[in-house]
Length: 459
Image 1 (cartoon, rainbow, N blue to C red):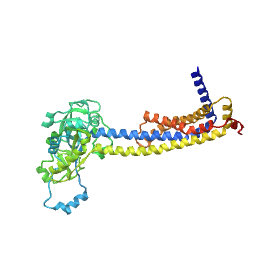
Image 2: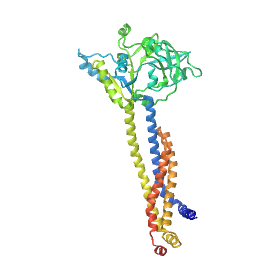
Image 3: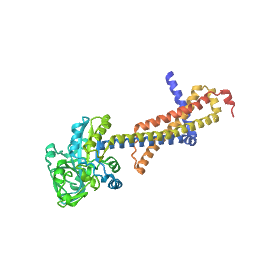
Image 4: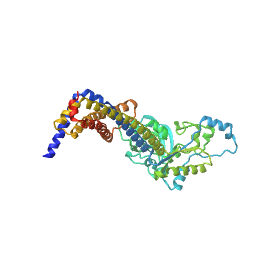
């Protein structure tokens, strides 16, 4: 019975506090504005942080886990002019064969921390099937390529080691190429013409979204708009750039080649002469452990420098380390923004404290009457603390909805991905309640410490 009486007493006091808040609803709303905007800002900032984190995770999926990318280094026009006028004309200039399949094989055979090596050669070509044509890239790869970049098949099967070794005329289509050439039919078992060569389709990749800016910065291509063939097929049936032919000598340096009327160009260098010096356009090395990436990249750097006669004609990128550095930068930025947003919560708490202090002064006689009729100091503290907490919680609830709307607006207007998580809502709601209790306690204690006789005489 005593417990029930105690509960009923607290509920009665809570009802009085609620009536006091609604009796001055306009003032209560103004008091809660700081909490409203503070909670909304915190939720919006956390949503931006969650979105940035999700984008980084998606980018890591695109670049693959623990990958190192080796690409030919393309010199600018100014560097080429400087070489021609200076050291480039020296008779002792060293010769480098550029990136070759032998480089990829050596990396796989010598370095124990390497899990997989995926060389790649890329051409741009008109792709035709049954009178329908489109423009895309034809990539020569190994089966390891699809494992390194986690590219599963939607249908069909991968080409095998025999087809790779013998240079069979087979291919796998990207999702966009399939949609353009075979929108309503199964392409597996059909043929596509890439340049002058007919390739039999053995499979189709699942669609993979790729951001254009990300692909340019990290050296990632659009997986959907490509046709994938065994790398030996590309070197045997299209062109092996490490082999010098009579036609090349007669035609001089060229960034493109015409094969039986099927136009193809080198994609790695944008049509520059540097592409001719490299047998392949890219080598992707997958390391066994993340903590071995830096050491492995340094070993590869020294190893390729020796194989290329000391010529610095390649560059090594570690996308995962770049992305982690970007993630750290964004985390710091989000912490700063969150701290700035949290200041408004403190300002809102100070506003609640000021209004509650003024309310105590206005209701001094009411406090005296309550204490004279049996209310204890704990009851008075509970009443005023409840009022402050109710104002803060109502502001927190409104701020949660405003923050969710603000996150949606930011995503629609700026294109920045925002993700509102349940954790951010719970944290914001808890903080608003804590602010109400922390900043409402001093006014409540001041009200409870007043002398009942003095309060009754107050005018």
